[in-house]
Length: 312
Image (cartoon, rainbow, N blue to C red; front, side, top):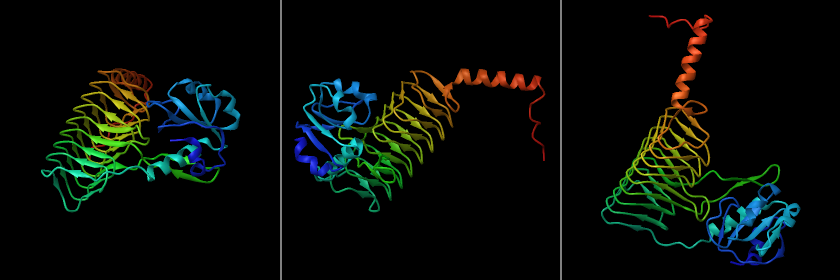
């Protein structure tokens, strides 16, 4: 694709400084593909443009001088992010579509919805009533999805456009549910946001009711996720995970193998393999319990402990 061919589609007052070609759209700090088009609003992330895989950039006028020499295509606008995602949305709406493929052994309720394009459903998949499977979704052998769940749900990528306007960045990535995964009722598994983003649930995971899994998150094999857990986008989890009821995991957190996240925990930092974390904000469980015991002892010595509950 040629940058100059899309300036009219981008809008936002983009002016072409130099032309170039691109094959994919990427955030400047998460480049994975060759010949990537990205955007830059402030000098803070100018270092990321040194990545040789970046071929084009949409930038603000004040950072134009910081563009690396190897970047061939440059467009300038006062709203680089809005221009980037306007182009992104255009490409999503005009992407190639392939007819959906459903294995004949799949058991799909007549009340479920499966998008007619860009879906692959493998052998022995079960979709209960009111399940929705959106485009760019793959469900491998033996996956079971309970009533009301959405596979490939629209992610929450909000793009501000000036002081009083905003729009949603459409999803261009994929959702892959590996073999043997069981997903409870009323869950939302969001689609990957950009073209190279994939939300992936590893083989034989068991997901309880009402769980949210954000765009681009990858979960390893045999994880257990209890009801109402909320996992933000672009997280990476290892194998044999346990996430307790109502736990919340912040954006772009990395969690190792054999990790236990206690019920109600709020995880904002990476968690190493084998760790158990507890609390809001979550810390290693042993430290949480040590702090709790210390606090109880101090309060008892000061006579500040609450009275015992009254017996009816």
